Length: 94
Image (cartoon, rainbow, N blue to C red; front, side, top):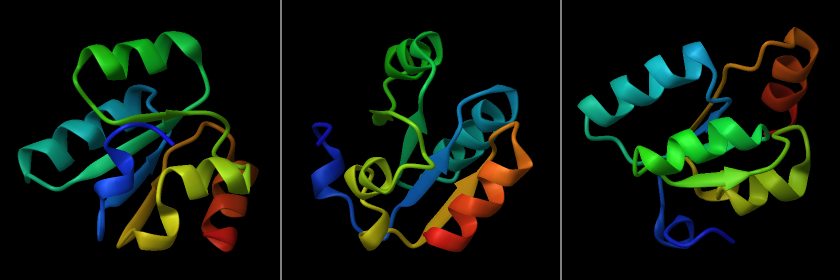
């Protein structure tokens, strides 16, 4: 599990750190909400970490990745992946 994620409770799991995910992350931070980013692309993972965000590297459509992000303790899941089918899948399974 990513360091820091295990302490989160009632947080937001943000799936995807592309253009829309980055805007959402900025809003969540501005509102001082705790959140963790789930991202599979290495460059975006690096970018999120450089922005001092909590990140779980992996595919958000995989249950173990969502569990590592603390989805069972989360208050919300936001999915902003470019694939509609993946967004629906995450919504239905989280």
